[in-house]
Length: 524
Image (cartoon, rainbow, N blue to C red; front, top):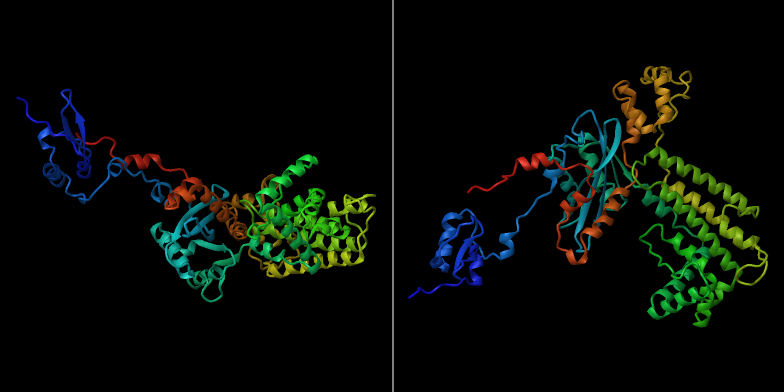
């Protein structure tokens, strides 16, 4: 007579056991931790628990699911990717780096702080992701400072290595008394704290005269009227399709997105005939506006000017932007505004293609006939250009004066310079070197001065003070766009600091070192 076979119960998983089935159908418990196979008679809670506590007592006994036993965490964190800092030599006291940092809220309403670093390595200025960590409680300047300080302490860094910090203009960051910048300068007075030029550009371009502001308000109301109803949205799309329009969809205006006004106004101008017909059929209160020639001219001008402003903003985006590039673009645009104002007063609208096209046509698209720009509208345009120039000058009033030899090393006049200037000796040597002249013509300014660190260290170090600082927080804001893909609404509990490092860091993981710290085979 055979003995009774005991069968595995699902509750035995909490002791770390699964089962294997023999040929005779009997089941034997198999430990998922040490891979030990026990007899069928051991299939009892007391015996399984005894095995767990005796052999695996260092682990805390708890009610554990099967998935938690089977899954082992694989870490790809700062220890794996941070150079410590052999890859990024910002731990050398004679080399300076700059930081850009930005705080934003993710999909789970958790505040995240992203930080990027710019430094010199291999005769190049490089930019890399430093860290992205959550601010778990308050988001005060002291909390931001503590998070950065803790990271510096863990990675043997100090504020003495940092020459500049760039952030947005929030009071938390740039408050005069208790902002992050003030706290940083209290510890390291040599650090230059700057406000992101993209943020300043966005605020400076918000100014609009009443006539233009009213026209923009009407455009937004018409777009929202079409887009907020699914039925109206479909009818308008079909209307555009039937009329052979290039576009079938209107774009929403978002004040959060700085470049939103240009595309919205251009799209409305492109489908203004279709939109006028649609609004008339629905008896909308603004239907007559799109038949008014002056409104069409205002719409054309605003589409043109915001396209130009967007183009200026985009020049300041991306990596590698330095203060010289940014200021040159800004000065050029301010002079253009003065020129455009003078041309507008002389009824020359060549710098505004859509407006010029409307004026030059014998019969405009609204069917009114030949149209000209009213004196009142010309005055509004001139006023807007003048206010825009003043607004830009107000937000960018504080401009640093940089030495001319930093940009024009070989046309710089030594004779007219103060003889006590400590850099004159090395400047003269550089100007007389044919090799340096060839290098200057074939490389960027930042690369040129990076390559002078060995031969002409005094002047190169001074020149790099211009190129090392960040002038925007573009990389941080771009990283939050990546975070939207990583931490979605369905994954809102994800701690994404390591995922962000994998997605953004340019430093390669040290695979050989990681492997050497792991046991390849478990003991038998």
